[in-house]
Image 1 (tube, rainbow, N blue to C red):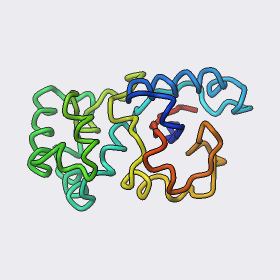
Image 2: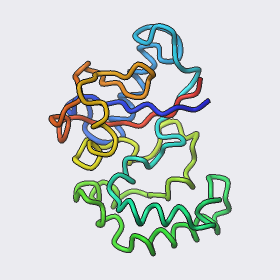
Image 3: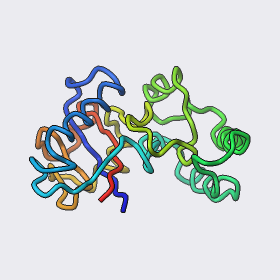
Image 4: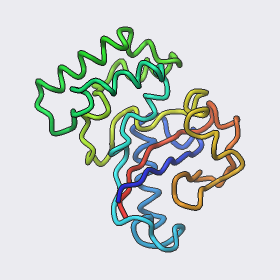
Length: 189
């Protein structure tokens, strides 16, 4: 079974998305996420950055109603990493119709800056087994990410069912905005 883990840590531990993703991979390996150490009885037998949840951080910056409509499109609904290049191009074209200003339509301008120089794919067409994930699978926490993904963990430093973990054991609060990286992990158990 696949599960999502949101990992946060202080922004001074990585200079960019690639550094943040590598930091989390190294940390989880060192702390026994797939064997035993911090996580006592290892919750996973393997993990990747992003995986089935690749692009989730990016999606927090897009209009929810438009996003819901986009994912109801029949072609989009059935698209996956195994779709042909032609199908993926059609899905990307539809994405651009729903979000013509992408990536500048992201609610945080710095997200658009990060994405502008990188090859971005519609999340459901991505390679879900790419070990280091994609550039937007590690971002600095901003208001959109905080509201949609972290707010429900306020007052916690880790969830009991391995949904969330802060690597410095800090409890979630609004101070995470601008001060913490967040990385999406897909793990199998």
